[in-house]
Length: 237
Image (cartoon, rainbow, N blue to C red; front, side):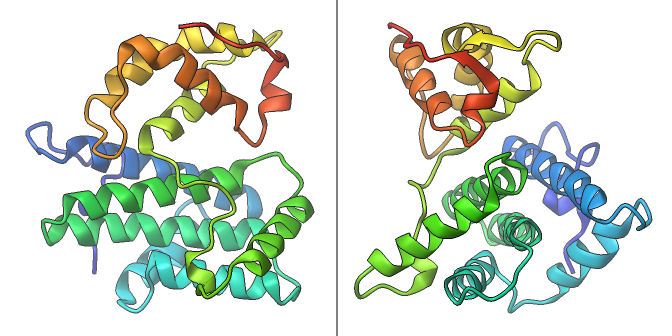
């Protein structure tokens, strides 16, 4: 069984650990999932996510991010009744557990790929976008795939941890009263933190010279972009 230390939940990381960043990101993702689970299950105890989802899943060696994603697409494509938000949460948690498993085996690149998927599905869980729309997009993407297993279908391009960090910061640092006046304002507010984070991103390191345009493009793809940014603007390099 995986321990909370191995998955990097807040307060569990060793500062001398060479994998401290990926464990920190994994821990933050799990903390977000725990918050979302509490919102879905308000009558449950504070440790319900750990007891009901994390521990049983970590004990099940057959439960992986890929297997959960395959199950998700199969259910959605069948049009069977499903709590899409909860299903996405389960996929994200499975990928977080994969991170710890890959790190334990010394497979750091696979661990970074897994955390990228974990963050994507966590964002899917959080997004304010209507889930019926997401259901339609998923079905369409599945139908368009030819000669591929549903597990390999992506509704959107696979995103890097740095892109997800930009998403997280854009939401976290959004001015409380009036929100962001524009994407450009958000880009300038988060750019230094995003670039610093990207220095350790094995999938997509970010160069400072092209960062403004890149981050602006990322923010435009956020599922809740219309809610976050008042105006549609473009940031110049």
